[in-house]
Amino acid sequence: VGEGMVVVHTTGGKVISLSADTGEQNWVHEYQTPTLTLRGASAPSIVSGGVILGDSSGRASVLIGTNGQQAWTQAVGDPTGATELEALADIDSNPVVVGGVIYMIAYNGELVALELRSGEVRWKRDYSAFENMLIRGGRIYLTDYQSHIYGLNQEGGIELWSNNELFGRKLTGPAWHDGFIVVGDLDGYLHWLNPT
Image 1 (cartoon, helix red, strand yellow):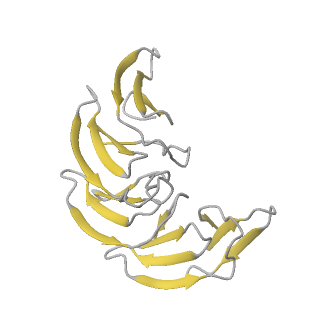
Image 2 (cartoon, one colour):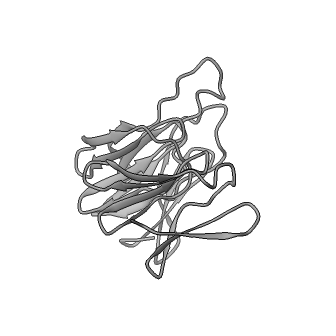
């Protein structure tokens, strides 16, 4: 929700913009979804008149908020492989925008920093995830698909630390609480980590 719009991203490959005041539909943008996906959908972000979207084909896009036309698109995930399972490249984590830069991550893809205005790649790093990232204090914190947790430098994506002690525990994306990073696991436990 933002800038007078409610924008919905469905798992079926539709992005629907509604008026926040009346609920009336403004526009619909559709894209082709692969046969096999993770069956999730990232929530769009609305910034500076644009709708930022990560789709199930591993592409980042900015749609013009007034009419739904695509301003630019950029590959984040790489849907390649011998089988449909190997070709999964969904962007299920929500895009994060900080200071004119979009940070996105894909499953079987990469963590990328993109210019908001042009989609130009500032940097990219090999991480695969589908949980939401946390960006705070010049750092990126993320949980990958194997439940490893990473702390990265926001400027260049340089890895500062990693923690693999919770491997296989189906961790949530990180949240911030009282100066610590917190993740939840499949048994309902919360784990507090030192952000440094």
